[in-house]
Picture 1: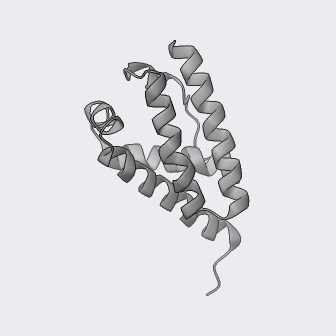
Picture 2: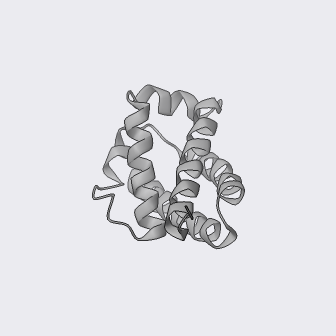
Length: 119
């Protein structure tokens, strides 16, 4: 049975999210912040896979507001920078180049919007 492009892209999105949040949890700076706030990692991973599936592949799986859950996190400017330091290489390692480029652009936009909103 042949894998469709969407199935392959969905698998890549799942890898992106899995690898990225493994790196977040292992990070000295961001790990404690996220571990203290996320109590259901399996649920969080599913939500993030849905978000990135919608953002990158145009699916309708994510219907929530991406901004509001972040307001309970105590993040500062260095945290936002570290987030992108982890995200950029993860996208490059897990996604095809065109999807990686789009993912980074979306993450930078989200990151900048959250930074401004939480300032």
